[in-house]
Length: 180
Image (cartoon, rainbow, N blue to C red; front, side, top):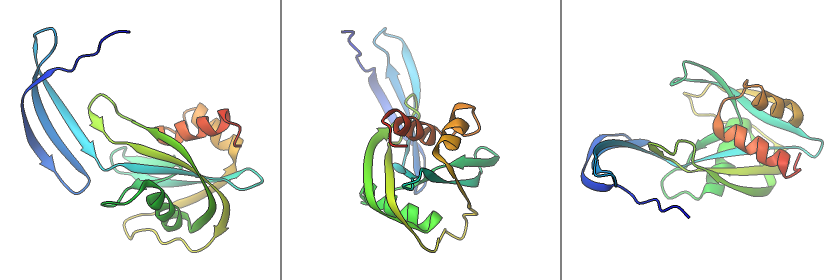
């Protein structure tokens, strides 16, 4: 097994912080002896949910994403509130964005979407045995709900129409495990 030693941190200082992210800059000495500068972004952990009906329909959303400068098709996703458990955040986000509640929840692990410079765990869930209700998105969210067959959503991830990494991972895991 190859050893993977961490660089030695010489100094670390915060550069920026808001309620959702913090940025710090670390001066390091790599194991080769070379000095280096590493930026680390720590984001609020998040959740991504695949709501699926007994007949194989799934629900996604299309929403404008500012950082991309365009709308993105994704599964319901959102950040954890302070001290909120991932499953609680998943239930809250599904109800807020699509007005759905689920009787069955399956934990599909997590992904670390940006391992080089970003620390942000994204917890993945499948929601089944759904009940429809009233969506209550935040005033800043303009969400277009999308319903389709699972195989259509999977194809959109495979052909690059869906680029949201947690959505792609969750769709692939569900397909490989035979959930849909």
